[in-house]
Length: 233
Length: 233
DNA sequence: TAATTAGTTTTGGCGAGCCTAATATTTTAG
DNA sequence: CTAAAATATTAGGCTCGCCAAAACTAATTA
Image (cartoon, rainbow over all chains, first blue to last red; front, top):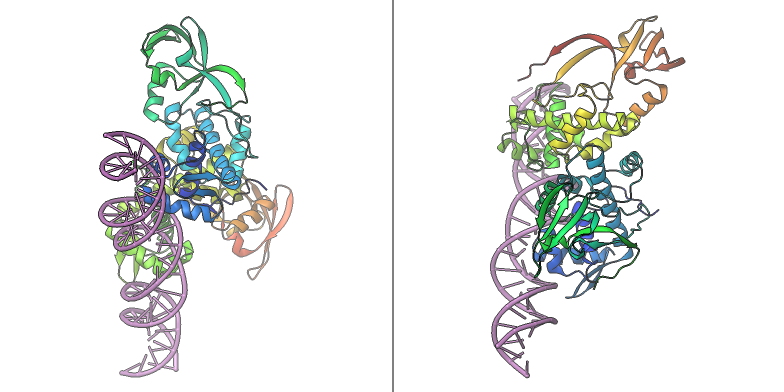
């Protein structure tokens, strides 16, 4: 019953809004109009107007002039689309051998049109994966999602050896940059030196020595610490 | 150069119009407004209006009040979309194990959004197929398409044995009906009896004996007669 | 030749999804 | 505690894709 989805009862735009809001409400409990506009690349009025319509349809909870939050129904849809997106990304990398930094655009287009049958077919072909190629959890069909907490590369002490578990999928260029250095989920990294005052971090990845900035290193998750927690200060 | 198309320069609707017109101009040289409307399931004014816009963009040649015909540019796009459609259908059947009568809807949605990279990936994965699961030719990347000419099952004399080469992909229910009887490309058929006066044809398919109407039998291509390149325009 | 009719196009409208410019309300900083 | 800055919303417009009703050929038939 959940995820019943006859493709097309929701427009692509609506699905995109829902996912964007889902992502934003991970940080703070309400997503602000401005942040939604920014993350979707549309104007503020477009967002304002869409919010009203989506709230009427029961997908959003609208605190006038403060922001929105997903209703359970909206959240379910967002997770369904996110699941589709991440499963498709996994398919593109594992089966069609896409480079990790080129899957996002394709998945963004496909996520709105594939059928449930398609999803089942690739899910089983992939062996029911639980994480996508960037190390992000794939929501289940029932609409649940695991939260993994990793150490950040930025916090690892010099001399330690870690395994890359997760990289951010938000910025394509950054992803490309990381991929070129070999920093992808599964890669082994030895931290050589951490320059003081927020300086760069020297690391050894698969034999090569490279330096990355603190800010990038804060976006790289390494090693599993513990599962199921959600502290975020 | 050909087929480079950054996805999205054309809307889904435009692509659908081009393919519909391509199919219609196989029968007669000009596609009539009415036939286009019918084959796309939209109203006449919708078609009239769209024709004007598409002609302005150089995709169509519009003989006012007589019909339209594709320009070379329009034809190229139509063939690109058709290629995409048929390659996706082949992928769905060969790789994802879809039943032959369920591929069309999925392909209709996917054909407008997949990238060139995706097409190359599945094309090579499939071993560069030249026909889709219904036995229709897959246009090449350069925009050429082979025309296979087959005998029609309806014309086969009693006692003969033939191989099914092509079934129509236009009607889902019909396809389902044929699939259930085992009449799919590759199946071996022995014609047992042809009733006179346009009567049903008794055939043996994979051990089972069934009867089909003349009208259906006229939509089933069997055995290769000859192959030739089509020159259109 | 005139009337009927099949087919086509024009007219006028609707909603979705966008936008810019103008306006309203918070928030924040002086 | 106001005034400027930031944020949100309203107003007004645009294109696309669609439609029904009306107007208009062109082909055929009486």
